Length: 277
Image 1: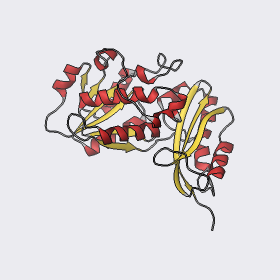
Image 2: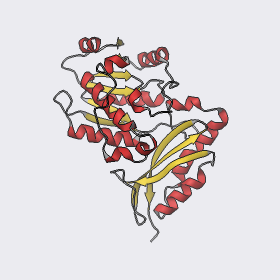
Image 3: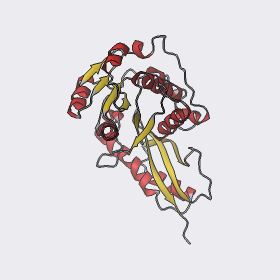
Image 4: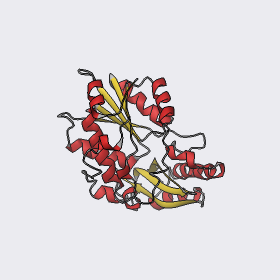
């Protein structure tokens, strides 16, 4: 596996004439990331993974300084996964003109995660656009666990070409621990007791399926989530990430954010709302 740390090293390492897949990450890799790499491998000829903890997507008081950085461990995982190239730049390589936000998430970026983490999505889109400008992929793969992020990246790619080409978006399903807890780099912050509490977040999402109304779905979900998983938001949204109305019927995405101890966790699951005849 090639390891590039600067733009120039990346440039000379990228192949010409091959279809490039790209999986951007912040490191602390787990099976969820590896599943995204598999999707990239199945759809392209050459896979690039980036590891960069992006300061622009952390709000004041968040865990940027303590975010897990385990590069040697990550490299071993990527080598075992037969990744072709790891791009592990420092901040200067990504932001040579200083850490300036250049992308806007618009109105969608102000709701849910955007409301809880002001500026998060502007910073996320800024680094995603910058990384794609550098890697110039044909396919970029993201995880469904970060559903709002996926929606915003889809909008970015719909309206902007990267190095003159339309980048395809791949979305990998959420992988879970045996308890149902969605895999996340932040799970390592949880104590044993907190992990049990966090496992009820997905139970709430699953309990909502088959409800007869929006209100029933939200009520079922809330009742199944442990009270020590402190809710920041719990909502049912449509494809445009707008809350569904009380008379909604069909499939909607249930999204949730909770704090367990000091660890903030998000999850989502597609829920069927169907009134009995």
